[in-house]
Length: 202
Length: 279
Ligand SMILES: C[S@@+](CC[C@H](N)C(=O)[O-])C[C@H]1O[C@@H](n2cnc3c(N)ncnc32)[C@H](O)[C@@H]1O
Image (cartoon, rainbow over all chains, first blue to last red; front, top):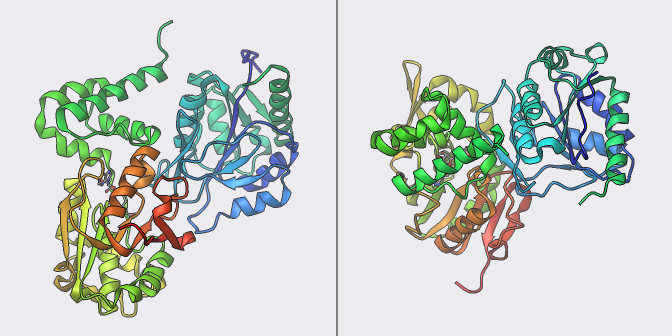
């Protein structure tokens, strides 16, 4: 992998996934230690339902608090935020969340592209974006936006993905800084946290 | 240092907002910026411009373009009986408390193409309250308002929402409130007669009458906190003593300056009552 990545500090982690995503989230997110100090935002394709099933499922296994992202809520360090079903999730320049019920994008709401485009604006080179398993191409455009804003792009190794289309499309688009197994992704995310400890973070 | 493309897009958005405010009197500066940026970019693309900057001359010099701009900016995504439990609670909890009033004024702000206000009116009719109700349904999108006023929908929409209608507490059939034909379904006159559609901008327009219930769902999510506070204040002023407010299922009143003026009736379903006291 190229080593063009020389960022001083990652400030936020965004994770997008679709088909098979919940299983991978269950591998990665419980590996984040209780003192993990960066905010994590998860955008997963799930059917519209009044209840956010992912929040409940992750809460059981994670050491970090897991909450549904709410409009105008400030993105919180050391917390896993999950997009609500049937709304697009966006993040503003002041690092508060916004929601929208605009039309589906890539046949998805929430759309990973919509979130990542806003997150690339909000965090620029401080964003690490992770694209996991999925059976469509949502997220690829968003990863390109992250890359264009000098963010860091991590893609699940399609060989380990339940549905390889989404990660493979990102790799084919030439925007993956790292291609890793779920365990490898977890280790890398944890290392962002340690390096942010060394460099004094505001 | 030259600007990166992200900040160029940000400059374009600022110019667009400035032009809309000063040229057309529509101030979008307190909209949540991330989704506004998306919509402005989508609008420029839809109108065939390579960038938002290229749209600006037309925006400034072609006054006829405004309706199209507003229609593109306020994408009227809506459906009948969205969140049926909310409608059920409105009918079962709020309406009985309002049933004793001789007249019932309702304001639905951000009605889009009308699906939601017709859903409410249908349930009012079934509850025997529509005859004394006057519903004002408002929006800034005139194209959407015109569609709403027409009340003609694809027949398959009625089929698709029949289940939600029942979950919302409907006691007959959804189709019984429409006249069907040629693949289209027209809302019955008995329902339409009680709804007035009007242009009203929550950013700049004021109170237009006293109401017992304000329904405003999935509109505040597009506003920043400052504008949310303004609009909630407007609702508070419009509501009669003990009147009710219904917001969208993901809309938060808790952080708002207006929060003290509203008491939750059902916080999970975003139903509030105007607190007694001052007014
Ligand atoms: C997503 S739709 C919500 C429709 C419906 N209430 C629902 O929940 O299904 C948002 C609506 O708010 C309208 N809107 C946006 N800004 C507005 C403003 N400043 N004043 C009035 N309506 C506005 C838009 O035109 C659009 O029709």
